[in-house]
Image 1 (cartoon, rainbow, N blue to C red):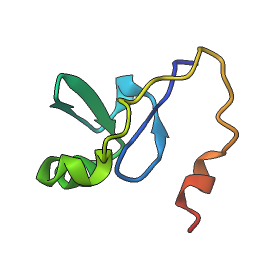
Image 2 (spheres, rainbow, N blue to C red):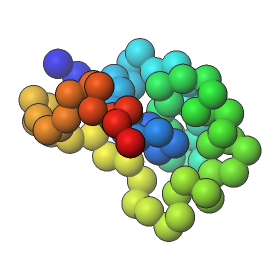
Image 3 (tube, rainbow, N blue to C red):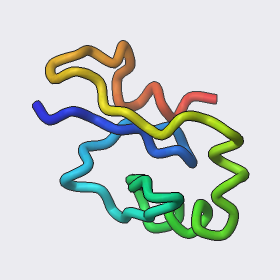
Length: 74
């Protein structure tokens, strides 16, 4: 299983190879689960980054502790 990255807009963890979109900001590539997340990020990246460190992928085979549907619970 490939290493997953977090969509900084919605928090969903996704495979970077099958991301719906990407944006480069300050030399860092960000991956998005949907075009709408990419558009929201592109409109105001600082809203989602807020001084946070760039996204890093977990070690190969690392468990995230969440199932895909748990990302959508409020």
